[in-house]
Length: 315
Image 1 (spheres, rainbow, N blue to C red):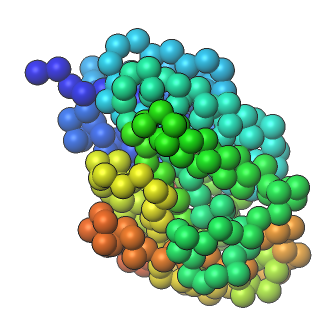
Image 2 (image 1 turned 180 degrees about the vertical axis):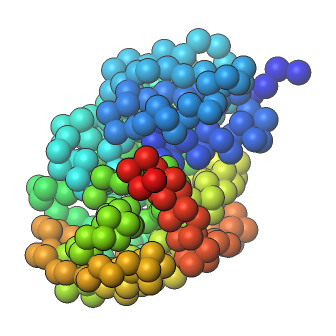
């Protein structure tokens, strides 16, 4: 029996590689696509021997051609951490706009269903807490972070336009902070930064006074939520994240305790437009998808630390 085929863009990235694993496990033929701007081929190297996986080295901001039938398209290509999108602002906007447009065209031509990876960043520095999907957000469109926030907001708008105008089957996931194995040590996000500093015996850098909050979801939980959303009948955005909220200062202390380091926590100025609060309202995910996170932060952090400790620089 011929396997149904799914295209995953950003397949060599942190989330894309875990999604590739999940869809192969579920019995799909996976076509991974990545231009390797921020992705790492090592994340999917274990998949290359498989007959049900193929890889296209391609930038989705340019015309996308995939021969044969497609059942699903999952658009996860994008720089996704502040350090990346501040360094690559134009590529970030292009992959969210032109890339999304190209993939919507492909999805329409293949009569497939498309899921786009949106983000909690569409809420900006929120005035509503926790953030429900109905909240329109508080984003600075011309600030340095605006390239990512507005690319994702445009991505949602064009996806809904195709859904309404062309009756295209579309799904939108708003992803909150996620962590786990295959994160890049140098991507500038809190968890890999804290862990790499702790493992090197360096002081741990917290920006601002550390009172800003985040909610961290383990990657396997996130992937399960995405999979359920794709197969659901719901076309409006859905938050997927872990509502267990913690201040960045307390999170740094958790990493210090877990690693057993002698590192001290030091404080530096807060970056421009850094959100003060981040916590998903997951009522929709619970009611529509029957989903909620299962992996506790302490359990997920141990698995992630084990992964980092196996990297060549810490062996």
